[in-house]
Amino acid sequence: MKTALTIAGSDSGGGAGIQADLKAFSAHGVYGMSVITAVTAQNTVEVRSVQDIETSIIKDQIEAVFDDIRVDAVKIGMLSSAKTAETVAASLQIYEPAIVVLDPVMVSKGGHHLLQSDAISVLKEKIIPMATIITPNIPEAEVLVRGNIQSAEDMMEACRSMQSLGAKAVLLKGGHLNGEPNDLLFDGEIFTWINGTRIHTKNTHGTGCTLSSAIAANLANGASLIEAVQEAKKYITLAITHSLEIGNGHGPTHHFYELYNNAKLVKKLLVKGI
Ligand SMILES: Nc1ncnc2c1ncn2[C@@H]1O[C@H](COP(=O)(O)OP(=O)(O)OP(=O)(O)O)[C@@H](O)[C@H]1O
Ligand SMILES: Cc1ncc(CO)c(N)n1
Picture: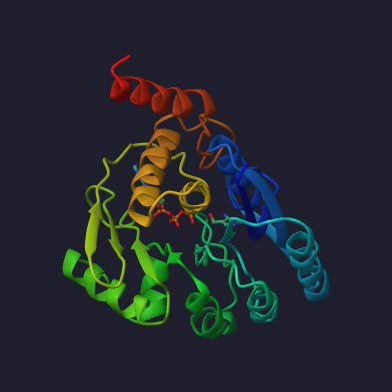
């Protein structure tokens, strides 16, 4: 069985962060592991408080996993502070994981800051250069490139600029712009639009976490970058289509094991002509 490690924050409400990542890994048949960077007291409405985990424990968690278990892919989410980002960068440098999917989480749906502003430079200088792919949304990309992104041309320019920070590829998510949620993949040479259809629901808690974990799981399972992203887009679309009316705020996405796996099985059988 392939394995994936998420390095991220805990969401007590279960919809985003570590909890979403592990659910997405399982739905893809990947063995999930976790390094917790921060504990958030969070539900579908708000983030009430955050406690950063001591950096020595973050380092120990990373070492405990890598010293014992083969890690096929790493997903990085909430890093919270500059010292946490420094610790993650230093620890990962020792193990040089081949696949790193970075979701540069900055602000929750309710507007709570999940990354302190002095951590941005560490993210840009030490974490992004390790990444196989980074998956910013529009506001996160605007922080990383220090500019406004409103059009398809702006998205292309932002991708180029972020890729030049050292990531192998960039998936800029268009969900925050008006119109269809079309994402743009740039691998340093080729631009590919990964188009979506907007689902009208308020239940989009953890969509970014789910998408990036699905990409990590697909890469761990041996998919090419483009396949990993295209399949993950199908997965998140299904997960939002069947999102759950849980809580009073933004409900979580549904990690739809049966439907997702059945859809893949039906496709396989059709290809084989059965
Ligand atoms: N209402 C929607 N319908 C369909 N797809 C959507 C919708 N909203 C977002 N998406 C898609 O979901 C994926 C996750 O994108 P999104 O921009 O919501 O992430 P995010 O803002 O980082 O999420 P998070 O709040 O978890 O940090 C992208 O592929 C995006 O295009
Ligand atoms: C712990 C955590 N990570 C990421 C997000 C972004 O959705 C969130 N709300 N909470």
